[in-house]
Image (tube, rainbow, N blue to C red; front, side, top):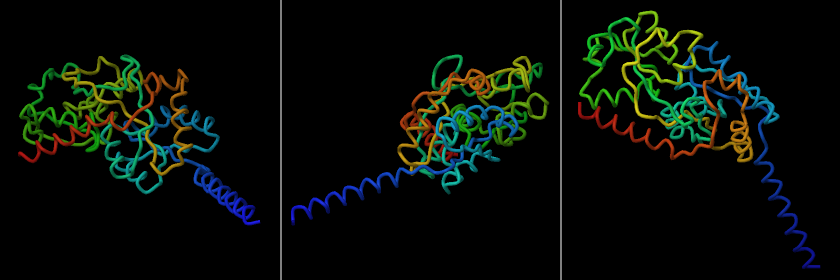
Length: 288
């Protein structure tokens, strides 16, 4: 009888542990998909609607697209569990990993190069006569967001290494808030020069601008691609399903709107070069 009792207790304990395991793996009824504002809200909805519908179908639960006014809003949203999965830039991902325990799932692949990365660029208006870094001295300049990789971090490090202090080098320095805003400001002649990237530049080609509207006067080395990341405390089975859903997204029209070839698996270590750039930026600023 004692043996039977022990077996019954062991079986009960095992059953409880299995029940607990499945309870922990219970998926939420809805997940919020946040995206950093690289463009205006209308463009963002149009570009990411197909992907959002794909996630809905693959996961079998509601996926709601959440647009934020700035990069910090998406990071903070994940930190406070209002955002479950998010499209980040490289630097904003590093900040989200530190502040919100974000985990990179996949990284976007460039259509042209087939590489999981993109390049920062500096642009001026066509026929402005501004064709070099030297020529934009004393002109107006726009970064994007303080947490943008190509819009702020990469050019800031480049400027510092070149002995350029933007506040002194340019007549005016401002933050546009997003890549589309910077590009349109250049096109409209409101700003003389701005930093952006080839991916977001290509996203607006034929819609909001053409390549002939601009000069590209500087191009960076390859930057690790923008990741899709999740909150670290989500169920492991949901993380796996999300990763598989992103990788399986192959709708030509949807990918064309995003201006990417698709997604491949990412790792946190891919963004160590960004962490190195952040540290270099801190060291350069400390020397001022």
